[in-house]
Length: 434
Image 1: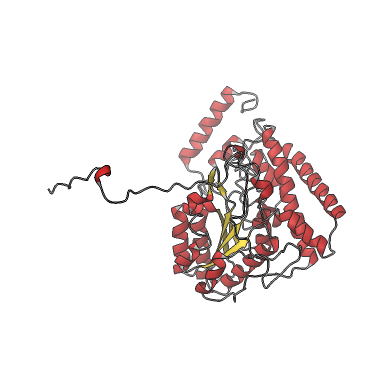
Image 2: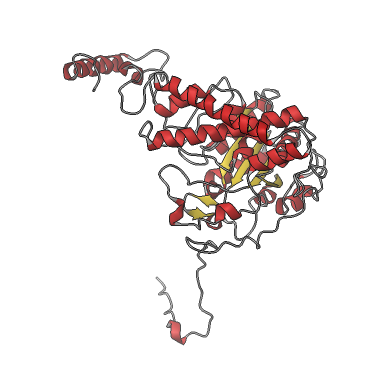
């Protein structure tokens, strides 16, 4: 076996020394924030290609930023979806309801009523406006911050809270972590804690829809950090090879827990640009502009229905709160970031647009916010009648053996009976602790 030649000592080599680049966010706790490095184009300046164009024609839009709402609070350009005032008000109310829901559930977690919660503050448009651009029966494969889709589709808030509390009325029978909802009736696929698994699932569902000659498309959401997972790349490959009627919504909120977006590749290019290497159409959108979000999702949905191919949309937004109730963002990012984020707040921007066009007022906004808060409060009180964390009000013990087999096998029946006997011996009065 040939011997490896001896390497010269580093000091004696005339070759330049290699160095490893480690991404580093621009701002850390205590730093002054300066977002001047971000290129924010004028609203309405982006061309809108035909929905059936070749994927190559979307290349400029993968590096640009599609915007509709300008600094004057008016809609501009070819991407303006020209929605009627009633639709805009419904969009605004749904986003406000999502925020009110988040606020109360966050407080509930701090009060010990549930173990965990994740807010989507600042990102409401990426789920609410996008879902409103879809057909109500288009299949959704969400990540864990898309509660706005369920609320926009009319899923009862009390049922969402029951799931968060894992109580006796939880439709998922306590088998999922809090906030990992599922609803077949609302075409909302089960949320998975294993990040990015929903992407190939969405592509597979879309391929099946195409095979059957159905009219329903699939849409999926993923955070920018999860695009570094292998599932993302597998999904993009299958989608483009089989021309699957699917939309990839990449929510770039700048942070994957405490890791900034550079660790997923944001320093080198945009996330929308990743579409180009696969032959997908790619759009980069102002994720805090509800009209731009709606327009881009509608464009991609129409493209998929026309069998023109899948689309990857990057929603450029900002995670205003911590990653979850287990996270303290003050430990890794400047507190000034949220206030100085140049794209503002999606709810405030849509509110100002409606006021500007004479279809809304500050008094109406105040009344609506109060209504949303009271609605969520009432739903919370109703859900708490079914139990909260640690109060022992949950589904009967035997249900842990159900819903896997059509008919429960004999050996599981024996295990269930044995476990039930042992529980009754331990807790003779109720069969459960407490």
